[in-house]
Length: 298
Ligand SMILES: C[S@@+](CC[C@H](N)C(=O)[O-])C[C@H]1O[C@@H](n2cnc3c(N)ncnc32)[C@H](O)[C@@H]1O
Image (cartoon, rainbow, N blue to C red; front, side):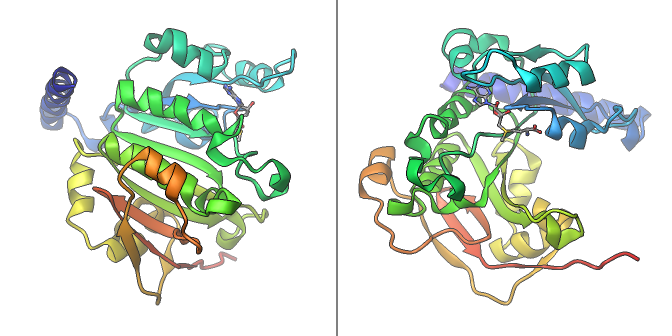
């Protein structure tokens, strides 16, 4: 563990040195793009958002590895689309659980891990099979966790249905607590926000939770830690800047429970602990109800 942290610190110092050197000769636009790994890639929604399609010349992100696999079907339609769109992609078509168990090393080092992990076990449309993080799909969270453990990228951006915040129905908030617990253990601060595309002028009523993790080794983490949680959530954070909100509510806050086992067995919160917007730093969570601000363009 110590060796890993030392190695990671050395790597970060080296890349910081490089970027300092770069500053003398290059302008901002010539910065190297952040290296992205796209999990549960489907037809590449994250990739299109991050790189543009066709890829922008000055894109700030570059997907260097992706993975997609649909269990129980022979024909892998999403992979056919992905490979058609990006014929030169470094794209893996293996079940991520198998890949993590046997070939974790084949995933390259990266700066950002993104993915919309399967939602069926958290989804309201699937109430009878609502097994949350213990379900067949829900347990794919652990594949993400193993990759983060091994690679510790600086940033994480995950997406799921908003019901993830209050799953499973009999222990509301348990699954998200567990996810926050894992990310905290790995040294991430986490911001989350439920965004309804329709609130920002898109022709689709779709509520999704976006989970943004920032590793403690980054400059952004220090900024986040030194900002009041409410200001981060309504003004300074990633989601607040991209999707503005206001809030007149008060922050709900608390401490994460102390172990996985305690969370799984004794999570008996009767009310939903996690509201539409929230932040977790060093085991403390803060969450608040927010209202979207959107100025309609004519
Ligand atoms: C919610 S969708 C993600 C959609 C994607 N963001 C897009 O833009 O198309 C989840 C994806 O995970 C894939 N998936 C499910 N189980 C998987 C597994 N064991 N290994 C890898 N991918 C899996 C599904 O086939 C599906 O495409």
